Image (cartoon, rainbow, N blue to C red):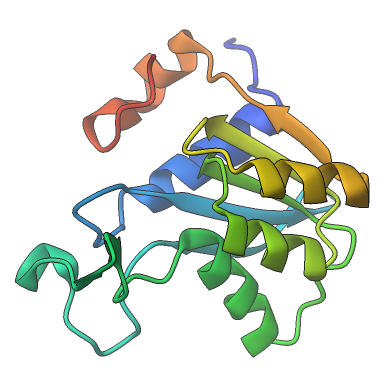
Length: 160
């Protein structure tokens, strides 16, 4: 009988799987909101529902940033808001360290722990806010044996 994966690995793999739905050409990101070991919301980065996708019509860049894309963390928070699910006291599992705007939104929504797979332009002010709010920060490394079993590496590059 094979060993069950731990909760951190499980939820991070869920985030990675969500990233495979991303419509962004620049970076595929997935996010899962979790409370009491239950997924309460999820998201990936992509366009507003009904709009064209960057993978189909290229990015809509302004000042070096794609303005078409909604970040995975925001989509997860917005999903909870839309369906009336409180995020107070929840954790987030996200494939890439949240940007400053997403960090501020996560903190304001009551997220108490940020779990991330990869560092990505970690903002000094975001780090300051995380410390100020006493939010736990945890980088998760996915077990290589698990990656081989689930074969997610074909969608996004998870191995260092």
